[in-house]
Structures are given as structure tokens and as C-alpha cells.
Image: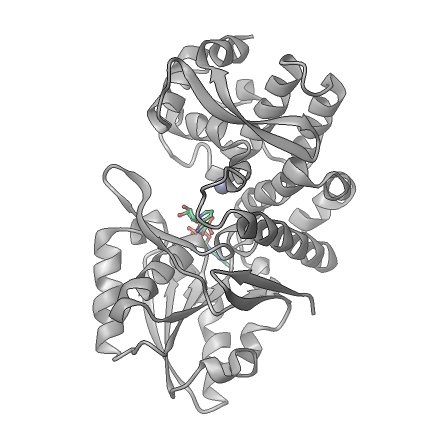
Length: 364
Ligand code: NAD
Ligand code: ZN
């Protein structure tokens, strides 16, 4: 089983990628489970498919799992979701040396991680990511948060888990569209920093979304390594290195905003199309060849992720989209920081991209 050793905030922990991990929770968690009662936070969808297996594996070793099940969706990452979680954890008499298990996608991981960071001034937690996005992105790096009225992820903390168990079995029940969305973040690591991994995605990426175990294991492991490497270089987002992870996200957020953050365009779909636009815009600026931009487009298109704005049912006016970007970030004299490409596998932060120019590009 591939194990990625991560060391962040001076604290080493493992990300294990494999199958049968939920069915083997007691052995996997080992001494991290100090008490009989084990608090587990999840959502209804994940509970429907995976609660039984986790329950059985803990039962058989004499543990007594205690469950808090949230409604699925972003709504749980809220003040009310946090209050419910905190009150429940306190009722469970969770103490600082204990570990809370977060079984679910990025929503449950972010919420539970944040709750763990403030419960009794910080207790432990274990990530059991069940979506591809959570396995390759949100469960690694230590960012935890809830949303506020002013925007997403605005209330949070850096808090590293003690262990991450990415059980590939869970991907079998993940809706295909969610699997594709997670894959957008996978191929992102290739486009931003690893040309060889991008080459692999070109040939084998479709297998990941088709459910091929070996391909999924390789994709998750390489993605976790890439994320851990980047985050280790810039843990608190001070040097700009971590910003490279936002490749495709500025264009993507504008598209998500224009479609009202609805089912019309999920986050991963926005990021996929956003990476295509970042590549094309980089070609327009003469940083990469048209051929490389076309390769990025083809690799996104090949797995059924959107690669053309025209295919979306939305108003694609360049100025309107650029206005959404403005709303996103601090505006400085008509320019915005953007992650662009010097090549496939060579992203860089261009601190002063003219919004006027981006709007004109989007209207072409
Ligand atoms: P999610 O947690 O909402 O999961 C997506 C959907 O899939 C949900 O309906 C969920 O119930 C369902 N689901 C999850 N696993 C399943 C499984 N195995 N079987 C069946 N259904 C399953 O969303 P997500 O895409 O996993 O994560 C998105 C969240 O992650 C956002 O809130 C985002 O802000 C956050 N995020 C955080 C970081 C970070 O660094 N902390 C990074 C990226 C994203
Ligand atoms: Zn993302």
C-alpha cells in the first residue's frame, strides 16, 4: 500500500492510499484510538454507503463508534453546522488527547477539522476522505474552515490531521460527476508542476474516472505527494508557492459565480474549464505554444469535463466574468494576480494581469 509521509507544522503524519482501509480501522488507527467510544462525523450519503463497514470494523475490536450525521452539502460548513458539531463533541466528552474521525468529502473534512482545532483549544482528528477531491486535495495540507455570509472558507484554522486514510473502495459509490470533479484537481498537479504526470494523465486519466483501481491508486498517491510538497514549501501561504494550487481557480470562480454556484457548474468543472482558459490565455501572451494549450484542452475534454465556455448555458460576456474576478480578489489598478503557464508542468504567479486584457480574451 502506498504511504506518503507528510511533515507539516513540524508534525509528521501518514497519508495511506489503498483498499479495505475502512474495514480495517482499528489496526489502521492503532494507538490514536485511546478510548472505547470513537466519535465519527459524516454526512447522510456517506453514512448510507459506508457507516456499516466502519461500524463493523470498530465493533469487532471492541470499540463503540458514536455517530454525528450531517445533511449532505455545503450547508454543513456553517455556523449552525459547527455549533451542532461542537455541542455533540462536548456531549461525547471528547478530550484534548482524543481523535475525532471525519468520514466524508471535503465538507465533512473541513468542518470536522475546524471543530477539532477549537475543541478544548485543539484536539486530534483523523481524515477518512471519501470523495476523490477530498483524497487528493482537501484532506492534505491542514486548511480547515466553515463558510460565512461574506464568503467561503473565511472562518477557519490551520490544523493538521494525525493520519489520513484514503480508502479507494469509497470511490465506488461516489457519483460519476463528483469523480470527474475530483479528477480536475488531479490533472491540475500535472499541469502546474509535473509534466511527466500530465503525460500519464493524457494516456491513463480516463481510467481514473472509469473506476480502474490501479490508476486511481497512482493518481491519488501522486496528487498527495504533489500537494504535500507544495504545501511544505509554503505552509501558511506567505511565499506565493501555495498559490500555484489555484491554477484554473480564478477563471473557475468567475464561471461558478456567473452560474450562481449551482448544479449547472460544479467546482471541479469550473476549475477544469478555468485551467483550459489559463492555458489558452498563456498561449495568447506568448508564454506557451498553441499546441500545449490544445493538449491541456484535449486532456480535460477526454474525461468529460467542460473545456468550452460556449457549451455552458450562461452569459459569457468577458467584462461580466472579469467583474466576478474583481469581486474575488483585491483589485490593484486594474490588474489581478493570475496563475499562468510557462509550459505544461511549469505554472507561475503573474502578479499583474490586466483585467481589460482578460476580458478581451474571453470575448474572442
Ligand atoms: P462534498 O463533501 O460535498 O462531497 C460531494 C458529494 O459527494 C456530497 O453529496 C457527499 O455526500 C457525496 N459523497 C462523498 N463521498 C461519497 C461516497 N464515497 N459515496 C457517495 N457519496 C459521497 O464535497 P467535496 O467535493 O468532497 O469537497 C468540497 C469541499 O472541500 C468544499 O467545501 C471546499 O471548500 C473544500 N475544499 C477544501 C480544501 C482544503 O484545503 N481544506 C481544498 C479543496 C476543497
Ligand atoms: Zn479547487
